[in-house]
Length: 313
Length: 275
Image (cartoon, rainbow over all chains, first blue to last red):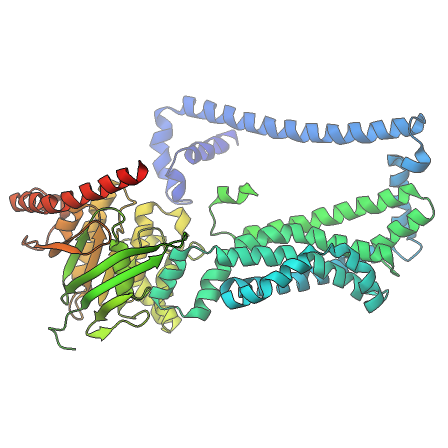
């Protein structure tokens, strides 16, 4: 077992040996490893062990920070250093989550609330992203459109969009539509600006090359501008999904019949601080999970990029 | 379109640009140049003198401000499908695999996918990249990417091949290999009909003499033709061997005498501007 890991890591450490995976390395690395195996093995092993230890150290420190924070909070609340009625405490928050999970909330089961909020956020996000990408690429490619519409988009962007939520509530009522609308206006602008910038900053050489090779304007847009802009667009997707959640939650908070935002509002109305924190915790978990899914999709989509370039974000 | 029609004909071509500061900059002035069918012409000149602009005029990417550009007797209006262009910088599509990159030209021109794939595979084999068709450009070395660019251009079977310092980003050994490969491809591509007419812009006089039938020396910018030298070295040539011939050295000395003066003028201007 240790022998196996040695040979794999040794061949991986040599530049070029890894370029022919599967077939090449086995016979090629045989004599090379026979030359001076002890030095290579111990060094690589030591380096690997150091890397593993570092990872464990980081992970351990992370957990320690969390435990210390929660522990301090709990102790302070129990010894009345802070008022547990206003500030709550981790054990109560946990009880609240547990109660919601097992007995459901006043508006129905917890899963239903999460589902509602996710549905609103996701719908708003998809509509906002499609609108932002289409308009961004169109304005990035057609100068006339950009010159005409540019000032209006700047003006709309200058409005603090969260104040539109009450208007949407009046327009679309207490149902999901008003939350979807808030999510859309929050998502649209960052996506639009990134798509626009991405379409503008396409390498001129790539466009010139495509045109020489025989691409018409439509093909240049579809096969050069859009792929080149996807990096920009994806950067905005990460941020904008957070915005979509904010839009949905704020909409629910102002007025709704279901959803996590309503849970927050209801808990606040009954001075239940633990309930507010509990809803926040659930939201954070949901946001992290969707973020993970997005990163996974991005990795699949950007196989053509060098691995190190993706870490700059 | 007889065999005596010149492949490329520039008459009194002038190109002016408006610089970002608003001033008018003349890149090419009153340029006359004729390239015969199947001829390999190298263009040398001082840095930034407008050599590349000349190529963009022939390709149809840019229109001349004054004068005329003709390709096979026809005035250039937009991009001509007979033209192939190899760029100085990497211009292969980073999100496409090697095979897909080479297929791009035929696909853009409406060739069915299966036929495009066959043609692309054929050219990838000729540039020695058959085993790398599934790789993405970032996984290749600079020289390999340049070979992808060559295959991508040659697969369209261009009658006119424009090359803008294509090998300037490569190291010296790779450059010599690529030059030899270019000569091979150029001669080999002409099995169906005459070889392509090539305009090869470079700042490397060695490369120019080793490759070309004629070497055009440009003046300091705005560019116009200063002198044209005929390279009477026998073909087929290989870059490393031809460099050692006495006639090569003689030509080098002659052309450098003409080019060196323009380089000096450019350098003095740069110094004057910096002061």
